[in-house]
Length: 197
Image: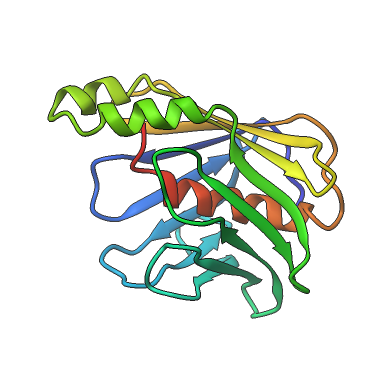
């Protein structure tokens, strides 16, 4: 799938089921993801259309609990592409995910640019009502790095009250082994981290 950056990812925050709509720089729909509510294990299908008739990727968690979970990424016809693996526990500090190819080799890394944003978000988010309002303007930035440590994509949350909006900008060319995994990995991280700021 050829992607024209920057991408804009939007989703409603106060809904039972989460969905993400992805459009490219030309305004064309690139992907549509709907996450079913109340599932014990993550099982997500990424579609090429909002009618959800053209599946492109399938992502499935290997366990119920998020701690150190691995999310296998494959094509709609079941061909494995790789995986997204959460590093350690979710903490107040920093979200970090490894992007692995189908042989289990690290081909990329998704991590927060500034760990202090997550700390502030976690502390303020615990304050009833005030936390919800203030969190709208706490905007984490995630870096997507290639295996050699070069930042190839930058994902930023934009200030918003009713819906969440992220932009994904290309910083450098994506290596061939990372390119087919980058978009589904970014979408899964957004689903996992959506409750934050």
